[in-house]
Length: 411
Image (tube, rainbow, N blue to C red):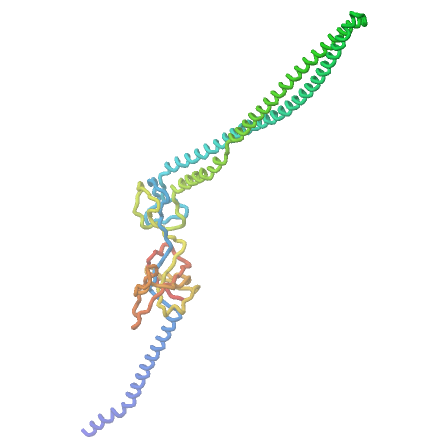
């Protein structure tokens, strides 16, 4: 029994170094695992800092509400909800007949104005011709006044010559009459002969004829002078009348400025009517998906009232909300790996386009108009998240949908 007990006591003593070595190895392994874990954690944290990642992201795209600019009944609706349309495809058509009639009326009014302008120009030309005729008549009347004045002057000169001739004839008549009266008493005394008395009588008769002729010429000259004066007065009156007619003709000339000033308004009505007619057919402004459509053919369209929405498929974005502590390593122009929740096996390339500079604060101290992003718990402090706008470089329109969840990794 002493040997058995001794053998039992000797076994632990021989195994003690092995156990100690194992224990030491285990401790080393544990320390190594912990160190490796810390190293891995540090590497992961560094990778996270160098390549920020978030799944708080969603797909965005530009979209517009399609609203008619005119009113009318829908006579054709050529798209369906969630359908893809290409740029220039017809979306719907509003009854064009009222706008065709309006365009015809506007064109007719425009042509009527042009015809009025042509007619007015012809009328103005006739009025100008009448004014020219009145001006010519006035000139002729003024010439007539000058002519009549010259006639008056000539008549006055003739009267003066006739008066002189009459005075001369009267003097000659007195002379021969006195001579006859002197020699007639001398005939009885035979101081003179009968022939001398007859000659004196003949001289008296001749002088009397000359005097009568001169007096008649004076009367005729005076009558001619009076007639010339009347003609001058008549010419002056005619000139006054012609001048009045000229003024009336000038004032009667119409102006075309009022009609010409209406041209822009008529042209504007034609352009508006033509534009409204073009607006009866609404086309897609870009390649897009139709969504939120709840109308049918026959509905009445109102200006500015949305009928459905078009999602612009030309450009897709991802709005990723990153913690404010990660923004220091994110810069515009950096490439981003994008993954869609619905297609996690497909990686898309994106580029950081911009980083948000404001969000809606929790205390509500700022008015509405900023993105409202909920804070997430990060240890104790609730860090804010700011939107980072990422433009997708190689989007697949069949996979991207507005509001779809995405995962982003900034490289």
